[in-house]
Image (cartoon, rainbow, N blue to C red):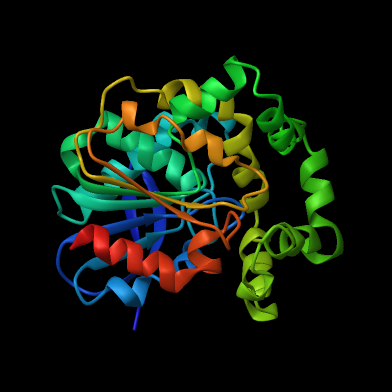
Length: 282
């Protein structure tokens, strides 16, 4: 069974769940989640790997720096490097979804030698996401309305806290193509995690740094490691077209589209995601 631990990395305390021994598989979650979003993958891969599912800084049981500047991409990348180093590994299989995917793409560009293989779920390469805004992809700009809304001070926190964080539940279950993937108990876990003191503002601060983080994450280096991009096609926030042309940034790319899934792909279609991961890692 998995175990809970904490580690000091990049000067802050990060909580993680781990199971298994062997090469390191490091998992990075998205918004508004925490390590629990990998509950279907942690035991699945623990037979071959030391699986480590982080609570990103600011989330759940990890430390929550107060300054907005603590949530820039450069700090998030430094956290990942610190975790790999402190766990006494020299490389990992890096797995990321949503914001965790953005961090994973960016980290692989800055520290390619530390990433043996890269797996990203429902988050385009940062250059492709930036391109959507630079070229006036109106459909994607409209899909990203919440990024702009989250730039406001205090109001997003107030709205999201109402009715015991009910909007967090609606964000997860309501935007899923497979809403039954989230049980009432699962949703309660997510609300409890985001209700930790300071967690909601910390999570929103990722978005308040989003435009500078996009710039920091845009590496023009072609990634050398084998890379798997898994994409739930019914994502209401990110269009499938953002995946087109990714091969110009990745030397060895596989893309697996999953038609019957929304944004929360590793939770909506865990068996298929696990199958594609196993095939890629074989």
